[in-house]
Amino acid sequence: SGVRELWAKYLVRAGYKQTEVGVIPEEWEVKQLAELGDFKNGINKAKEDFGRGFPFVNLMDVFGIPRMNAARADLGLLESTAAERKLYDLRRGDVLFVRSSVKPAGVGLTSLIPDDLPETVFSGFLIRFRDDGLIDDGFKEHCFRSEGFRSRLLAGSTVSANTNINQQALSRLEIAIPQDLSEQR
Image (tube, rainbow, N blue to C red; front, side, top):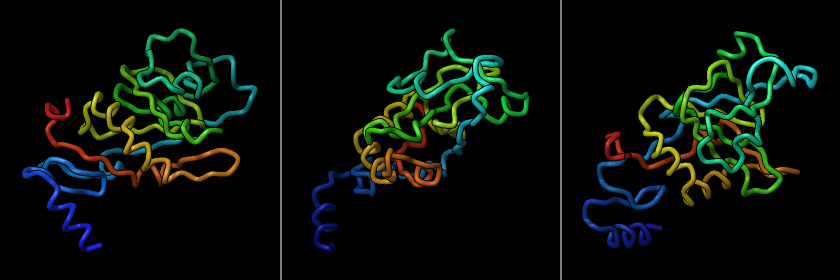
């Protein structure tokens, strides 16, 4: 192991460093997602609450869609209280992760929310990530769709009838990030 580390260090160009997530510029940091924001599971309601009420983002509204079209008029409806709409709200920059998928490749797929979605809640089949304003929206899209991130996410998932990911596993995932938002852009 020590020889491997020395060899890796020898192969890394000046100004870069070897980290858990790969070779990155010296001034970048590796952070767990829990250090950059919070996760929230979506709302679960009874079957009779669907079809009326307020807009509702379901799994199929975001599955395989990197950036949700916030102007969608075809969102489903869900009866929700004002407290639920506040707790499960969707704001510009939020990222929705798919919690469960029959195929492993589907779990953890992400969709960025490009604009506030007033009075809208999201499904229990999704997990919302809301960062602390330290990550550029485009950088989120890039990081969460990168091959390395997807590999680490799948390694943290569990498999039963479906492949699943939870808040705890997502919180531990690491990304390499420059502190400067203009560099992220």
